[in-house]
Image (cartoon, rainbow, N blue to C red; front, side, top):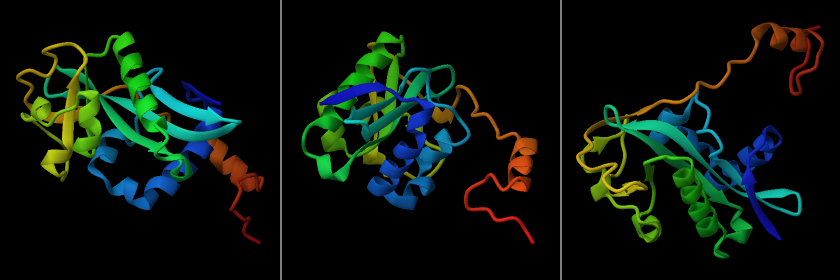
Length: 190
């Protein structure tokens, strides 16, 4: 049985492994990563699909502006375990994420992805025609969806990250851990 739920801190390692299997290291070079790095996902909009204690799908939405003064969400990445692709898990997770975003009062969602896949959820390139991202992107893959009618109407400008910054690691704790040989993969100097 599959369960969609909010991601917890215990899911981070499994989520990262899933993203590595689906996208590899190339995911860190993508333009949308510039909007995510150093930020926390939007509150209650980091979701996972769990089956028998295993994370098999994930999606996160991030706070951004769709031009000056226009709050929106950036969706991505969304990933499904390659062994389970084609079963409709990704579509169900997408619908759940969009419904949750709407319930939480968000107005619009943007993403970079395959238009033929995302058009069935209501995304279009026309919705973001006046916007640009902080790096290269194939224009036909830059898509938007209004959760509130008119939310992206006339939107112009650069998409920028907003929301909460991710906490930085406590340097003193890291040094203490290293000195105590508590960090896996690190060996103390002899």
